[in-house]
Image (cartoon, rainbow, N blue to C red; front, side):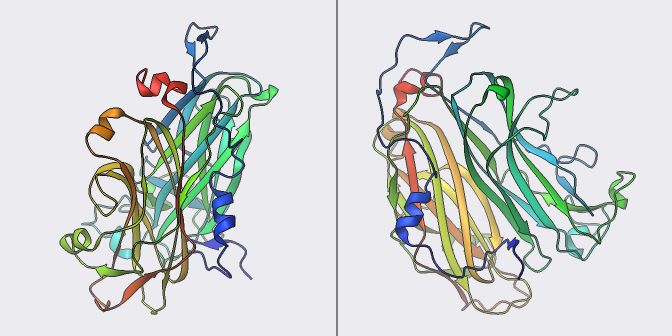
Length: 393
């Protein structure tokens, strides 16, 4: 049995809702929200103020250092490559860092490699591979080049998936929490590293695009969010909704259909200002044998109603193809939900989803089923804990 999960994970059994809720930001502190007020502001050695909570994000993918920011090389053993990295200054022993991330990559098909293609696959060596993608969140120092090193403390559990030619689009998503140890104090980075490997891949030596197999790293379709807690027991209790608003999704063909067929699967009302950590899980099923299964796309938005599919982007759209029973994880961060957001009517956090098909073989009557067992959950901090993010709210 292949122990590496495929990018549309086959589920042997659905987890119970209780376990799903318990997994929301797993291991996250006390349910006591603690003192919502701030104490007198401490100052770091460099003079910067120290707040109880600081939040960061990085949505600027870096990619392969030699082949370009839109590519991850595939080699027989793989090359650990930093995709996102957040600098953390003056870490002290005992403080806590939390991180959530997802990023989309694409297995290069002949059409992606064609001369007229806009894909970053174009110009690279063709292949028929099903590479394994490994990913991990790492807390580490800087190397000689001033950038994060792959050696350090792993935050959370590393992920591993197989990005097949048939399934084409692959998303790695993970959450991690770690208490800073004595060996990780000072100035550090929290980074997402990925590598792709296949025994049949080219060695990519020298690292010239035409001699290398790559995955396309899709820009603008992922983000690393980090929260840094400098006081214990800051995290508030989780708020979770597990009622699906739709039970199926039509297969859209063009842009107009995608816009018209986008649906809200989960919605949560938001009532106060402050930073928000988000975790969602979507369960779906598609039982028809397509040469390329339909692509299920998801995004998080702030909207003015629980049914609205348009609003302020919280986490950008990304997706994976669905064959059989499929599980999708979405992580997110709102650095600070502001009073301006609430006054503008953006009082709902919506997980919006649409599916798309290839017109060459798809039947528009086919649908992706949304199944029970998913959820959308948040933990929202008090704004007073993060005055830098919330502007002193």
